[in-house]
Length: 242
Image (cartoon, helix red, strand yellow):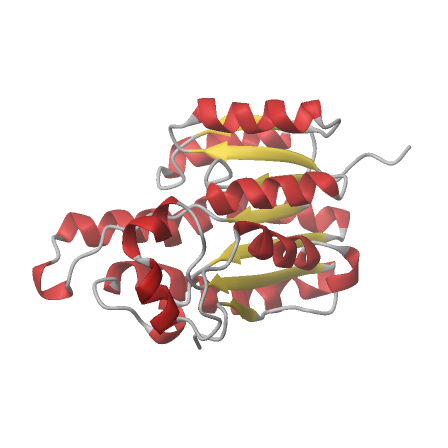
């Protein structure tokens, strides 16, 4: 029997991250559900996947902490290479830039952009040795068209676009693809706080918020064998926002 591919989903205990974990587990991956501090929520998702007969484990570390990230990733690599990586960890701390505190800027960029490096870099050579890999980073429509009060968040997410396009060129000959998905307004706690229903109808041509499962379906496709020739792309999933 073939060994299942191992998939790490950072921010896997959140709304979108959880949907991605479920979608990847349904394809037969062994899913590592990452959380920052909410290990209980990650473990609850692992228990759910186990009840469904799927393979998963939970892990907790701060992706913004270089040493903690490397130690955690090395422990995961002891069991074999990670062949699917979904960089979904991110936070937002909104304010107009004129009134933004320095720590607001740094923490959002540390998690969203530096976290991408801390987790991805140590996985690359073990992944390359298998000559197959999928790296998908979750960005935002804010990184494409901008959003008031989110210069820090848009900067962190837009950094993933350039980094992913460059990494795709570096790793393509090893059978590794690197892509970005950029969701718009997606149902969940973050959207519920930021976007009243009437505002969604004005902002989104589709006149509704997207569902986490819709984002997860796109990520699962990009992580599949069928998507092997899609590389270095930023793919919007935003109901027509831009």
